[in-house]
Image (tube, rainbow, N blue to C red):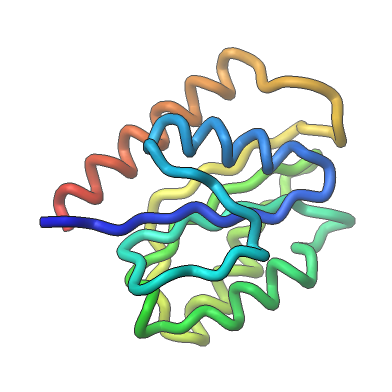
Length: 141
């Protein structure tokens, strides 16, 4: 069976973009910003974003709000933050309201300050393990 997966992200500081690219390498997907519309039906949509002053950016909220539940079968959230906050709570509410299933799998990397450099080895390993698990879940669907 053929599965269509996609990665979309919003990144102000570059941290979520770096994470999306590492995730894309692991999943053999090309990450795109939320400006690129989805094409057709997507089995698993990875959505990434950061936290800015305890909130998800309004552009990412709007993107998530406008997702078509007939074209997105499941969303997997990921993100970065300099604090303990994540995109999960705010985007999860939007997904639930729109009737789009949210995966139990997610990855949030904390302690990342704007443009401070690369991910450490532990964070890279977390991204790889997350991608491996997400890939295996796709095969079960």
